[in-house]
Length: 244
Length: 216
Image (cartoon, chains in turn green, orange):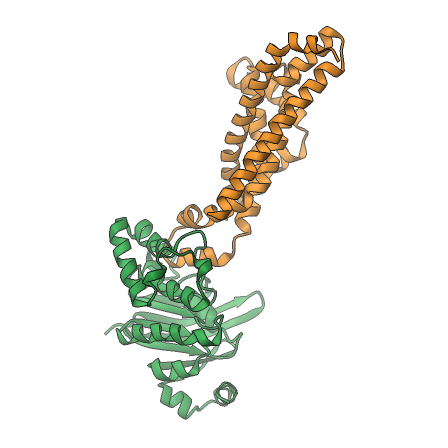
């Protein structure tokens, strides 16, 4: 089986500040990879490099057979296959929930409005929000907004889902409902890369945990290996802080 | 006040008012359209697009409208058509001037939209154009309405400047009446009142539009 994503010797800096240093990473189909690390460790930047929201200056990224950093790569086409969920939801406030979800399938994939709406309603049922189809994002709670954002990303039928701290902006009582949706997705075999501070989720759902520290991939392994028996001192220190 | 005199000139004032409305509306609509193109140019990545559009805005904001009107009427339009036409020159000058100000309104409006909106659009596979068309502009336009309101009101008032090239609009007839009847108060107060009614109505219309789009 070929990897869905291959990252080779990826480096990225903002000015004189190096945020990613020689990152190597492979993600297999159906794998759930969880990126952990302190804030500023570069995990969000790595995720954003994977769908070209940030441009890495050195190294290679392959999405299936397509080299992301090649000059002639059609980036919008590549992004159609990669859903992304943001910390701040980024729903379109001027559109109803259902129109948020159907916009890209209609305009980008070229589906008919009926087709897109049927798919949109199906996804809203999946995230438990079919009654909110005609509501505007401003009337939703944080947890509801994030579930809509997940439905919106799924509507493009992506092969890969990227989650950038999807629960970090939520009130504690709403974290569970979003994680539940993500768990379902993982069980259905979606390839996922998740940046999160939810260690319980990482341990339960992750196939592989990756620990980043100051832009360097310091340690990776199964949840048992990384949480149960971390080898690196920095990993130990980080885990002792977040699991305390 | 000699109201009889004003009544005698009322046909010409009415005709002038209609022409003022005509060139103002043309200037507003064409300026708003051209302004969007200029604004997108100023936000382009390549300097070859950015430099000329920057220069355009700087020139039209940095020189008096009166000078622009004279250059366009006596220079640009004759160079293009062989002879000048006051209506074409008036509309062209107001359009080009207004486009420079509208471009700045668009740019400020577009840049006020959170960058997460663009990133979300891109992440769904949208192109730059699609993100603008379906996500950024619909939100930005709402925020631009008050600024556009100001610009449109300024444009209606500034349209009086084209009276210097004898475009037969409201101010032209006021000045004609002043010269012919040797009066001050009657022609200029009448003109002032009509301009006030025009801008006041436009302001009311814009407040109505603003309220409608915000509650949507």
